[in-house]
Image (tube, rainbow, N blue to C red; front, side):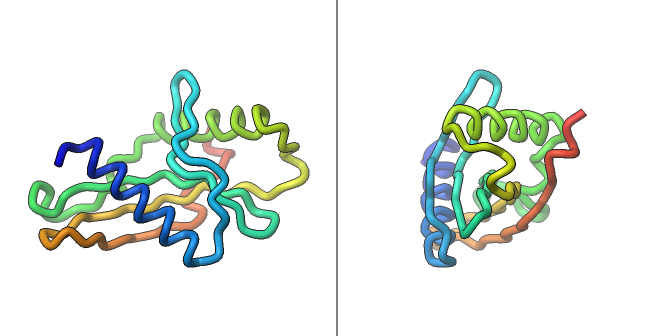
Length: 127
């Protein structure tokens, strides 16, 4: 299984995990030039933009996929989220926005372990 396939599998796992927690999945893999949002979900008046990071345990012993999120990546995610709201005609004043990160590690038996961080960063981090 290549990196892209593992990433897609991790996104599917995360979407299912979020659905079980009561989130409605609004969109997946929303792209614009310079950015992509893995999962856009909604719960009550909160729109949550979820960045999914994953790696395979057998290749990456120790550490966490969270280490792979750079300040530049955060800027791209925030700008893409603002573009998403504009494209979908969702006024920012009518919803609360949150940026979460799902860090998944694929174990040797094929299962995932998830470290889910709500509000991992916010829009004020764009400079």
